Length: 271
Image 1 (cartoon, rainbow, N blue to C red):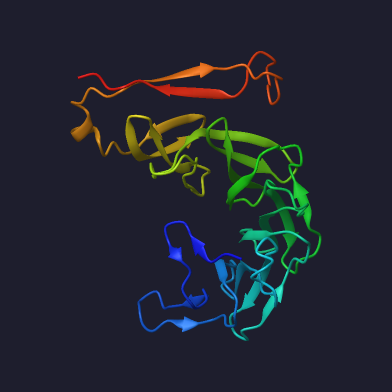
Image 2 (image 1 turned 90 degrees about the vertical axis):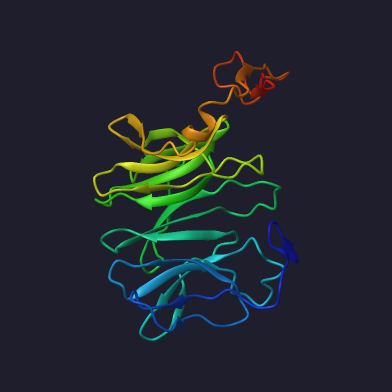
């Protein structure tokens, strides 16, 4: 049972629910209720429903890895489950035409680690299918393209985060491999991205000697838009970072056959 969280400490009494507030302000209106935690709300294009994920089951405290995707009707308040498999289904996003829903999940085999795959289903929950089954990466963020023919997805790869355009036919085309998180307090990859209607991808990026900035990628070229720390760090003589290729004893995970498991070494700063 989850009784405390990173950064949050011991879990306080109460539940996370979905609220709606007018764009001009005013009192919020609660839309979901019950002894469950609801999260990741996403509007449908017609504005008549909200998609979200949650574990809405009597034993939810003991089945935290069994969330489903739900559809909340705004007018009636009806909540309908769209998925039902044994395993987590989350991060639902409706296609621009409102006919399909992309989401992340996996079949729970009770292993210590499972990677989240990309699925697409109809708005009523039927016809669910795995997209790009050959992509051996755990996806953690998705966004539809404006034409509804592809889904942009972020996943960890080689120590950083890659954003790729995944076609509904299963094709995978990397857009950028330089997405990075703003946090320096934990040894995890991360970051965020957004997709414009013309396909330009905006994302957070950094290097070992600079905190996170914002960049865009279009037509295979990356352009950094901000350099927020150049004034304060430009005159500093910072430590350097070298990449070392280390051969694993059994060669496991090696793509090229010569080396794998890339490690980095940070030299001390000179004065």
